Image (cartoon, rainbow, N blue to C red; front, side, top):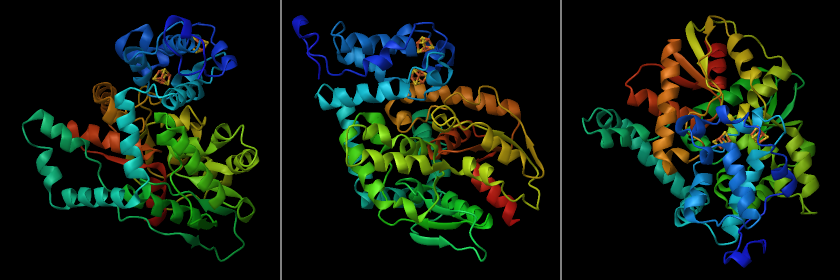
Amino acid sequence: MTEAGRHKGFSTPFAPEDADLSRCVHCGLCLQSCPTYIELGLETESPRGRLYLMKGISKGRIEPTAGVLAHLDLCLQCRNCEAVCPSGVPFGRIMEDARADTVAAHHAPFSWRVRIFFLRAFILRPWLLRTLVSILRIVDRSGLRALGSRVPLTGLRNLFCLLPQVRGRPFKKTGVLATPEATPQRRVAFFSGCVMPLLHGRVHEATIRVLARNGCWVVAPPEQTCCGALFSHSGDRATAVKLAKRNLDAFVADEFDVVIVNSAGCGAALKEYPHLFHDDPNYSEKAQRFSALVRDISEFLVELDPLSSAEAITATVTYQDSCHLGHAQGVREQPRQLLRSIPGVQFVEMDNADRCCGSAGIYNLTQPEMSGQLLEGKIRAVKETDADIIATSNPGCILQLETGLRRERLRGRVMHVVELLDEAYSR
Ligand code: SF4
Ligand code: SF4
């Protein structure tokens, strides 16, 4: 916590790295890439405006009232601005630091504290998350979801549309998951995550099959845990650091060549572990070694030159860039390359494929109005492609796009890129 601003009767809760903040030259080139600015046209809801507010707060010129912090809260942390900024402003890091400092200085508004309470309650207690997913499974199997998504009351219908759909049985596997007969191409450590094995077990199964098919030896270290991304984004750095330490201890680097992730959000968090430990002598080097090995599944497969699938999938496919894959990790071409490599696939780009769909972790729950507006635009762009399948690379995007299809009562499947590849391999 800085002392600046005390003379004005308030304390400033945070001080993001001055060097980071000072990189902004106010050119405004990021504005037309910012989803909240595009929707609202307000400077306060733009990257430049938010940087101005954060700088003002850190210098004690602007009081961090709940109203001011609300502008930071409406940010999706999609990092589209970061990807286009010619000055290299690390917006994602600045925003995460600002939120973490605000929480650590006990300046967080009530809504932020409630969010952290629920995140800790569910993510740190796997049995509670499992119970929730079991309830969702019952909703699916009993036909309640189908019924609910047709009721004439818009509010109730939207609520049912928002309920995540469970894909496949929970993925509980740990230890060695695939052993090729020949010398393995690569020794892979698989990162499983917290929500994904429960909600999207089918995507994990597909990932393991695709890796095995491409001659990899695969192990899932049993002590691994949540990557901590949702906590970092919400300002709960203490929990994010605790989880990151558990992961760094669980993955022993000399046993494998690469760490594979199939969730864009987790992948970005794992690659950015060194930032969490830059001043921790015990974990700093470990974090750097670990992060250097992390690869998204599509990034890895393209490096490996994957087997081509023998059978065709005759479908029109479009691709939604997951923000934390495209903007945060710079992985844009590889998923497209994999999709185009599947025989029979007619690949069509949608307009603004790299614009956030409004999922953004738990943003669809905390900012339902803006999230809904962004989803509407996304579904309009999907409709124009006439695609049968929307492929993407993140569980949150899958859930959000499925919600959009259900709301509009559209046909079409939302699939992870690796699921589609697996389907082509297995036909
Ligand atoms: S963040 Fe980058 S692109 Fe946006 S105004 Fe600042 S310097 Fe320009
Ligand atoms: S992270 Fe996304 S929503 Fe936030 S300011 Fe940048 S572009 Fe806008």
